[in-house]
Length: 464
Image (tube, rainbow, N blue to C red; front, side, top):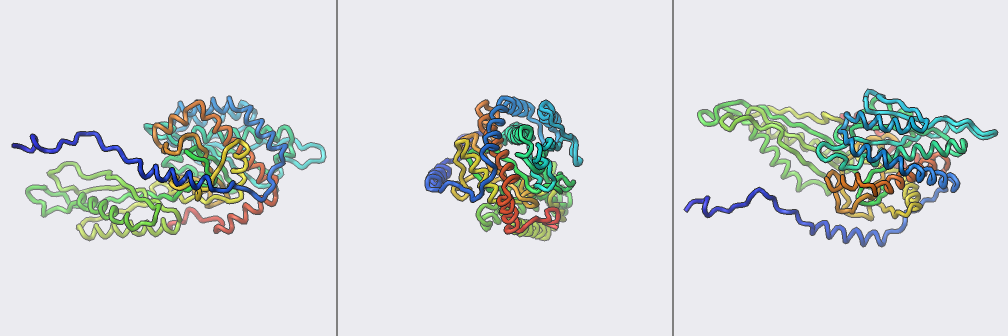
């Protein structure tokens, strides 16, 4: 009898991952959410009449925002190639008399628009008073290759545009009601390109005091966890030889890469909870009968704190170099071929105002601590939040078990029902901006909270 007759036949279909852990997490999350107290704020914020005007303006924009979101969803342009997407947003602004500048800070698909100054009413302060804070609404609009807007950036853009238009309408109706300076910044290539960091290095946020945006998700959270991420490429250089006739004359780069992959796997059991390392083989040789003289891996290295991300990076460095010594190969370790992403630092007072604004729309927002098991990804907004106070809340558009970056999530992001989430997010952003512009005590608390968390970070030199 041969093994072909009696051997185990597996087939190409993989097994289905169990949902038992997710089910247990969901039960615990439901229990904690039920016991969680409502989020409150000690600050007054914007006056009720302005909040009402912003809500009315957002609701009037619902059809236009839904159309913009659907158009961006259909375009589904990847990072740095969002030519039509950026143009569609600029055209939406121009249709309402708002000027913007495209191709800014060295990125052709980035744009900036500023809330126009309105003539001050008799005896009222100029609405463009430069003594007030400068607040930036951020818009993302890049899609993922293969799965389109499976992260819902079409909704992010529509929500930020809606908030900007609502604030513009409120200023038009009552110039004194919206003081300070409000920007809408289009930020390309969040998915893998870290466009916000490129914009920051070019000076886009030099005069910004506060930055805000909202992201679609499977839950309503004021301060979701987004962890830091670095990319590392490890190339081993060996010596080619005939793999059968003279393997002893070679130095096997693939062996080194395979050992690296195993060593990193062994490191995982010693990582702090929530840290992640995941990688792929980029190159492993060309033919089995030639000892590979080159092999390459690429890893994403993630951690919850800047300090622990730095420490984890050093351990990955040690593994790469130690294996080169053990295998007689050479090694090149290249960190951050694209800009890294730092963990998000949420501003507490601003997050509280977002939660209250969402309560006005009938949403119950939780703190991340009351929502265990929420997915922890990475975003380039983390870099901005380390420079200036900011928030990046998430808003539910799908059930909590639907993960980002899946075709299932894309279906929700492209659904006509998602417009309710867009208008809710647009109002939340507009109201939070108005709160910070008009409540001096809140603005002081925002700045104090940021200072207590360590103040601005020299992001570019984080890992120097």
